[in-house]
Image 1 (cartoon, chains in turn cyan, purple):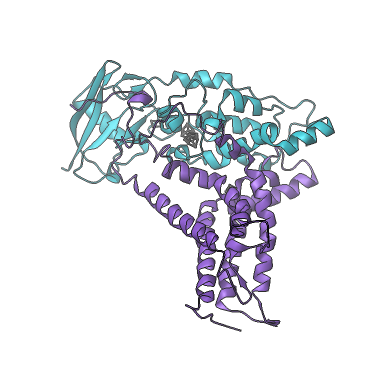
Image 2 (image 1 turned 30 degrees about the vertical axis):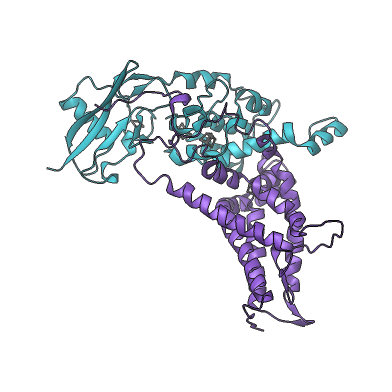
Length: 246
Length: 252
Ligand code: SF4
Ligand code: SF4
Ligand code: FES
Ligand code: FES
């Protein structure tokens, strides 16, 4: 039977390295199957987080051959036969053990987002075309692969000042909601740090839900921030009209 | 066991360090090459101040044709300010040059240059990218001049005609129009800024426009490249005609 060679990261906050495992290849096998085989037959102490094996819970995020991936959605036959497949934990978050990282920073960021603010005295009805945009953002499974790959967090380590693409997607879902009365432009500029995103689109490249994060969420939000904070004509208009334009 | 530092702080990351096995460097290298070649040619052509006209054809790099006696250099250096601002602040080109020239990042999950504390588009000069919509307004006006050139390229000594040059100039203006109309800022201004698309007749009209612009916007990168090629090619063609190297083909 054909075999696959995997180099899996083993270690914790104190350090570690790649360890080689050999796993029998089966048709349709995904990387998570191989990891489970290793766990079941060779290394019962191998730590891995997973839940659904259907690309829907967002738990099994890791880096396969250096690219952020859901292990359960990454087929073994996508890689050249005979070459080792390297499986490592997400690099941006602190490691707990082996393939498991601590993603709690994300939940802290989430709490800071001004919540859905329903319009007062409005009829609670809307049309499909009003909600299409928002539905794209609701596909998010919170795998945090976009947070992992975003260079603002990964390389520049600006967790102090940047919410990351996942949460810009969430804000976009609130801002563009037809029944939401909130305005998060100042939050986006000052607290979510949207200006730190240089629209290099790595988040869009890795999103397993194919959310067009940069084009449909981040750029439209940047434009809303421009409306509110950078566009001198709009500022003048507001000054003379004494109110916000529609 | 190969050692690997976890969550390496920025200071220890080296440019190009990655566990990726694919040719991640290819896309930024091609982008850098394409932008350098097209940019360098356009700059050279803009400096020439000669051979930008032939018969009814005007190179798009010199359109609109202006006479500015107070300006000692090539008029193209003035004429091109709006188009250059438009492209330099374009959301697509920003991605392209931040990756290919600033290596920030060169590719996804690849180590980058660390020059001081990262500020993205928050500080001068990059904070000015927020004014892209004003470059769009100018570029929109430029389209009128460029379509006027297409019209002029249909008349040979007062008689209607179509030459290869007409088609070359049409391709340049046509692709520039697609590029301009697929702009992210335009998409926002047209309707993207609305929260409710169905709440008024005006909103419904803007939603219709936004939907069409969204389709165009999906091809913005393609239009950015094709239009840059087409503009450059139109200049090359007119220049070669003017130099007598080529002879125009007339279809009508
Ligand atoms: S486009 Fe912005 S948010 Fe997305 S990965 Fe790049 S810098 Fe991060
Ligand atoms: S936006 Fe996409 S990549 Fe980011 S957390 Fe959601 S599903 Fe994952
Ligand atoms: S196990 Fe649920 S997304 Fe992979
Ligand atoms: S021209 Fe590219 S985004 Fe406006």
